[in-house]
View 1 (cartoon, rainbow, N blue to C red):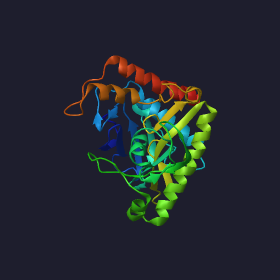
View 2: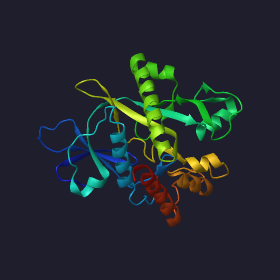
View 3: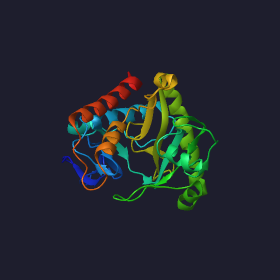
View 4: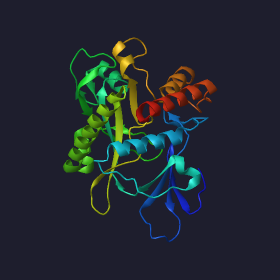
Length: 285
């Protein structure tokens, strides 16, 4: 956590630190969101971090917010402190909705594991005969309850989402998430990338009640990207992703998930950083 003059630390997650303006400034409802270089996997923050990760996540989020300008977001046109400017966003404080809006366009990860057992993903029935990495007939909305800090997020059904936030909001979350995913997928494809899955977070504007896209968006930490040409060619590397999967794979092979995770080797840190850099270069350059 960084000490910042004029800002008061209010919360730290696994990756981000949040600050409110300190003192009587007439700027209530303004939040400074600073992305760190911390990296987490299997619900643990790992050592060391990924150099430059916070700046890359922030740059990519800002780029995507600009591409998706038709959807209201929480960014404010206020400069962040110079010392954290490359990895910080000044944003509007929202009434957060406690649902992670996950959209899956491809069968992979925990979805593939569930499908093998039951033919479903988060309880949604899918056609028989799909294989790992297959494109789904249509993108699916698979929400999760955003648990308090220190607890595990929990996959929930759409009906449970309705119970949690009401039918109108649940429908709005689902439809908006699917719309943004389809738009982002088309943009990614134009850059030679597949957006396999992602998660969005939303809140309500306290003045207007408008549903507002927030937190990070479509970054390496919240999304799974594949190379389009490599995927089309098939083979063992077709599902290699531009994210921290390298870290997860190394931990899975070198840690039994009990006690403190081992320190990440330098080569794993650098390979992960290279993946983050390559994704942002592919999308924004």
